[in-house]
Length: 498
Image (cartoon, rainbow, N blue to C red; front, side, top):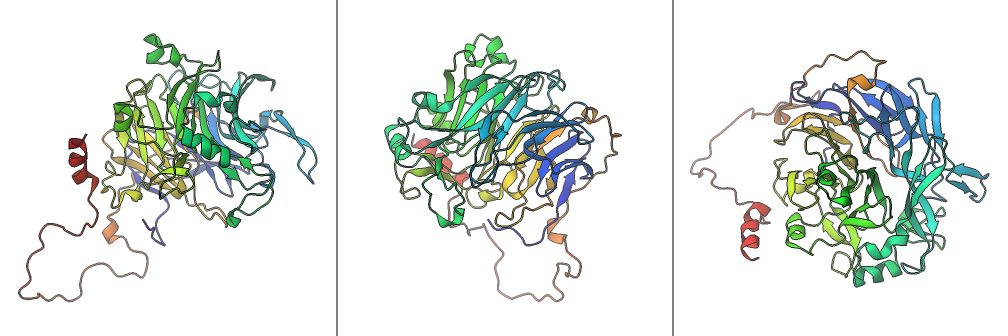
């Protein structure tokens, strides 16, 4: 689906009576960590502070990174994870995971953090009543990169998504390496063969991505884990299900279509969804989750607590048997629209969802109007709404349980070439009370524009200057312009054939 050349940015919809009141935090390309109010006023910028992602702490402090390793030698490696106060002073930093010796560069220590982290006290990094992250102490959970070799998976070197926990002094007190648990991940024979040949090799070493090849020092980004969080207190563990111990850790792997829970005490994977979604009737009803991001349990104190919330990107991901869309067995699952799913993690029943259908679009004809094939996230808010980051086109919006948009924001900041996008990796909404440095802003409604009548300066309004009636024409009947059967019409036949 194409995009218009000109369209409004900033806040485009705001219903103060139904949106959750608070500030929204995201990483603005070329600027830094940006905090906005619900009318889009940029109330605080931590200029230059990177964030993969940024997260706010009570009292107006923020977590992010001060720099990124050169892409010639790594992939999305942040140099550190730093805590910064309201005035830009670093109050805590972790960078002692690995000492880097990159060619032509002075040796230096780095965290190699990427995609996610959590501070003790809160399992998921966003507001939940009674679960405040610690500000002046506590452990921090980080997702980091490690270069490993595992011939069981592939002869190629691998970029492993290690999960570590560090104490306040920066000592690593717990570590989990996914490559050591390959046999627990559920890859079938075809997927194993593809991974052996090409574990999603990255063109490291300064080779341009556009060349379409991999130099000899490339590494296999075989899982590409993009979220990690604690389960936190939850109803499932309270009911006796030991898999959901509050200390256990949930993660998801974009390239492999896997969501999994690790028992923190034993390191074993005790719950898994994917990489295939055809092993049970419940999985088939759920459908393939593809290239997903930000899988986590909704924390206690929020509507839907204990359910799994995930941004199911669609796009392309997975390993397996070759098909016309994936002749080499890489990225075997394809879908050109996204879904936000709230799932009961025991029954796999969908409790709530936001898909192109709920957005008012016709699947598959214009389903790609809700589509972010990479990045993106979903946050459950205290009022029951869901904040969705449709990341690839820089759109952040809040929807009610009934799927009505009550707040929408389009990022006005673009990255430079060659990736000239206004993308937002992940956005979070936080209560005003977490930022005592600012007076609570006055909310001003932003009504939804009538798109058909929206014009830029100099453009004529709609409506014919002259009209004539053509004799003998028939009134329009039912719309027969669809050349593809909409999902709403084909689904009854598919169901009947089961």
